[in-house]
Image 1: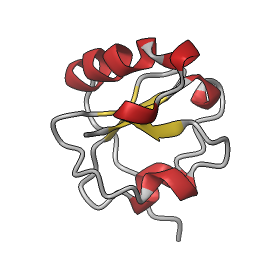
Image 2: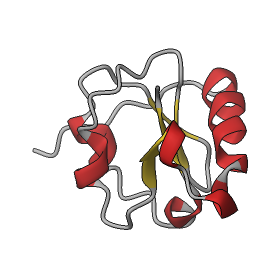
Image 3: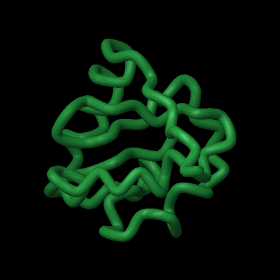
Image 4: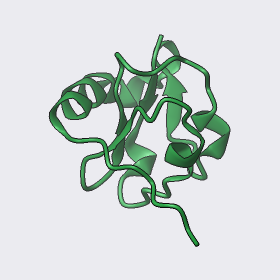
Length: 88
């Protein structure tokens, strides 16, 4: 099952999750980031990297945020992936 980014990401977009994602499946939708469900390899690297605890395995998304499963699917397939730029 893919991972899902939920409401706590809104307005934060720390991008730590993008930095650790080995398959670059995390996309920017403006107000928050989303995970492309067909590209996610379910490695879980993004979960501990998120400073606001916004990322859950799809089957563990809390009930109040279940709508984010479909939001991740919709936005990740609609938006281009914006890579994290190396700080240097």
